[in-house]
Length: 246
Image (cartoon, helix red, strand yellow):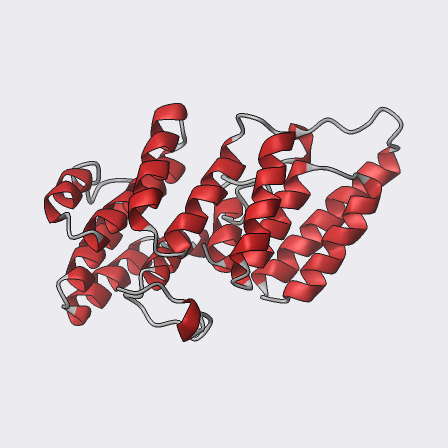
């Protein structure tokens, strides 16, 4: 997943750090050591916030520096591994990203964030069958996900189905969305079908409708990034050699 997606998920309160960005992975999800002082806790939280801000501004090296500083205060913290993984993903260094997300999973067995991030790596790489299976398992394993997270996960399943030319399956997935939802999934799903059929004008029309109705960037960025990774929307931030084949 792209960096912007990571940041937007965090903003939705989905991830560990602000991701998808911030999925807000709260530092509280991993208890601090007893000897950690209150001032150190405050400094740690400040560094996380600064790192997230640098991420949002695509200042990746600055963000990594803040993460490294935070690690000195609290080593082996899942949120730091998730954040590093998101930065490596933005850099298109998927192997390093995978190592970081797996480390986060080891530190927080059963946590949603690292599982989502690992599945997202399959999506970003264009391994759509693998990604679809992973996203489906997430919905099965975490049946009480917030609607924002459930819908972006279902949307990614829909894109995976279209990429595998399973239009019928995508039509079934589409039934999970309506224009009355509190998320833009319905509009972006319509856009995905249009892009899949080669109708870029209609695709952009549906995407524009979404941004007109849902004003906050964190509501729409995860969907836009998903379309970018699917190569249906152009992005100068993804080098051609790293884009999955259609």
